Length: 113
Picture: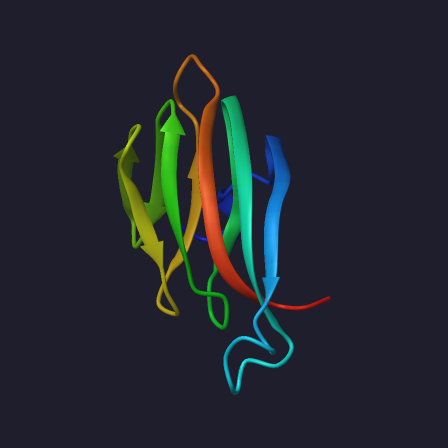
């Protein structure tokens, strides 16, 4: 699917839960932080457009609802208690096709802003 066919983000709220400055914690990680967020995707919501995770690895855990992860032309549904890795090869977008809000916990390593 091309970027033009992927909807823009809508119906998504993000709450920053915690961060840790990794510079003082791990040698060579200056300018990076470990970040934990709660992301809510409302029914019909989209977390787009297509995006990658180069230089921003992470993991996702689903708390509630179902999130459809679109990558490599394949749509995979994840429900509560299940999640996925987001590594340098991840190029995807997400949507909530369900009838209740989908809530995930996202933990990643990012460059400090």
